[in-house]
Length: 271
Image (cartoon, rainbow, N blue to C red):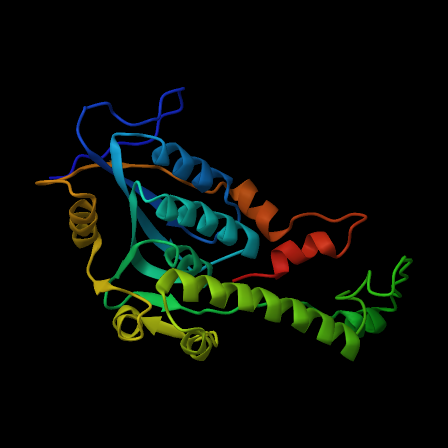
């Protein structure tokens, strides 16, 4: 049996000090709306000498762009440092931003039925102009800068504004593909062919080189121990990461105010 522990709240690293070599499981679950908690845990385990390897258990459909990138960067730094192996175990779904993070690890293991891929970027905006006209409400906008109200829900988007947003999405999409190409050592042309937003099963993803091996969490633990050079059954410590309802609201509705719509775009632009 694998022993599991949870991160504590004191000044210590949070792991049970047994003097044995350990694998840390870090769970990334649900919609990705923030990165601070996960990156803090990653930094903590990367400095803990008892932790010989890190296993990311990802069960996420993706989320906001920047938090996904920040977690990816934190994982990539550990990988490049070379002191600890980072393995990803995919649960039910590890798609979009979830796959973005996985691409930074040394090794990816998925279940045959895992839903993964979905390499793309989306921005959705509503247009209430017709509704406002029906109820007799007129929107008045005062702005400095021709594009400051681009994406306003109170009027139709112009062709120029559509092109502006498309250019932003294309650039972020290129960043996604570059990360996958580098992380998975795949040719960019192949990644471009796969990165059209489609999803893959774990088995399909393995055939395309997006996943290394098929297996469950127990298999991933054994693989992580092997890569870390741990003999016998590894001792496993587990972090506890959760997103409060308030944080989820912050991620979905980041606020209104004088910087419209730049603040709103944090919620609309997503992997």
